[in-house]
Image (cartoon, rainbow, N blue to C red; front, side, top):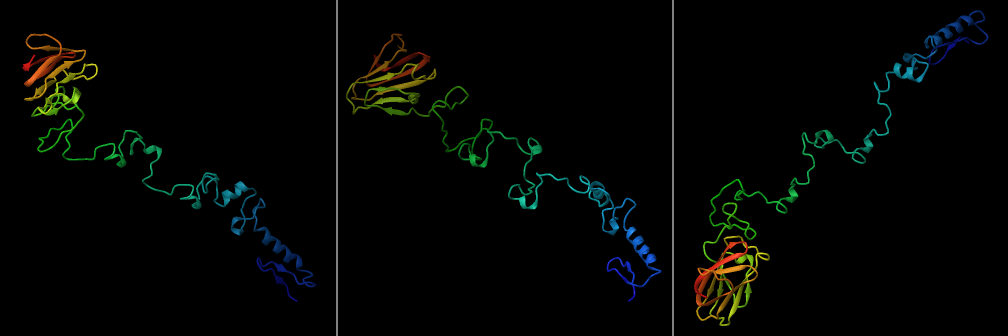
Length: 268
């Protein structure tokens, strides 16, 4: 039986009972072959399937797996594919990070209007809307606002082009919205009535407010009274309540915060 060789490294396997004078040479050659696989430090060379190193750190360097240079160091917070869209946000170029705030995106501000506010808490855009810095000529449009808040010059209230009527057939205490109107006592009510101007402390008509009282033909006598403020008859200057006869009209103008001046016909 002749010599044989190993399967992987082809090391000579001397024939049993033969190679009496040559087996040492054969074995020595095999040992040299095996020894050549290792470095002087005893590490199996990388080219031969080893790490070429005697410790883990040197092995990583030899294999090109240096931590922090060739491979990522272990970090429990690192996201893997299975986490994306589950525990972490998938990449989105529109997502804002801290560095964007105040630079490419607006920092949070509770007064900023979003779409949901439009038409609810803020006015939707309307080309016909006039702002305080924009003047428009209005045709067949209605200007609305709280009583005595609309002005023509920042001070004087917008007035009427007529004298609106407030017809009363009962005793009546005037209200703020009666400013600029006439209080009408119709002929259908033949009972004497009292119309009272409230004190400035309860209804603060602006100075310059004018209110007219008209007592129609055949109506009962109207007493024009005032509460704690002063009403003077023009031109006498006397104070107190005034009587307005049928077919009489009288206008009362507020001249100070607590004083009114009344004049007219059929007024005593």
